[in-house]
Image (cartoon, rainbow, N blue to C red; front, side, top):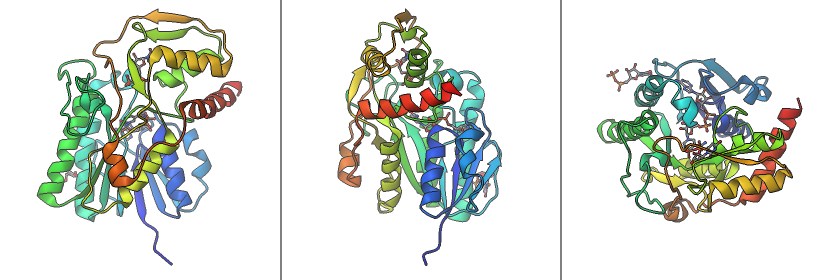
Length: 315
Ligand code: NAD
Ligand code: UDP
Ligand code: UDP
């Protein structure tokens, strides 16, 4: 029988991390979920607690961690603007010190290490859609910089540990991803709009709602993670993972109103500083190297997510 891998998932109690833990446990691996519960929740991983191959550790990745592992998925970092701006210094420490500690761990154990990077490395992009070779347009002093620059520095660290210490890395740039287990108070647009629509509150559009995003369903994203990890060691990324179907935030609001049958009204609030005006992944590289593209339509993904929040709000 093939030996199972010991896999560390940092940020494993979060939205994406908990789905990743599910997938890895189902594939027969030993999973060590490491999380400080800043934005993650025990309820996301509760159903895994009685699995003999699953272990959880409350730990902040800005501190060193000595464990023995074969693979590391580094997802620890708040992802919603309101949460990463709540304590920007801690956000930057999480990205930078967290990356150094996880890379140090990978170097010592010779583990492979995956980095959850982000489309935010492109900032408010002047190239559209965004290919991986675009260097981005980031305000290094702005309120989003703790996240954007933190993730950019983390990518630099990954590539330097790779060049200098031969650490085996994989870097994915994730574009807006949504699905069940987003926190109802997460603050990101999909969860905000669904919770507002289901509870009859006003739908809060920031700015004129004409800014765009491209939304990927979580199962498609995880398929991309798996393919990137399974690809040969010469393909390390960075690679964009996201759904190229782009829509304005206003269109998203209208779709959610229609799918929920809600009569909530649209209200317009000020646009947050440095909010990117447009975003769409160019996924040519993922198609070519990983044979990957999203399969779940936005309508189907939103229906699943709405159904999750309906149950949650009824509790
Ligand atoms: P999330 O906030 O649900 O998950 C992040 C997890 O990291 C939480 O469980 C949180 O408690 C944990 N965490 C934060 N700081 C930590 C620390 N110092 N030590 C240990 N754990 C810590 O967000 P998510 O959407 O699941 O995002 C997961 C990863 O994917 C993040 O790195 C994020 O930057 C990246 N990403 C997500 C998206 C998206 O659209 N969801 C887009 C781009 C990148
Ligand atoms: N580190 C860790 N776990 C390990 C090995 C290292 O947390 O198993 C941390 C350690 O605290 C160090 C960081 O990772 O500060 C970077 O490790 P590296 O070996 O690159 O640097 P050094 O130990 O030489 O500073
Ligand atoms: N947004 C909005 N209303 C909300 C939350 C977000 O109009 O209640 C907008 C936000 O200004 C941004 C887009 O939706 O233009 C996506 O925001 P989110 O925080 O989900 O992610 P981002 O891609 O900005 O990190």
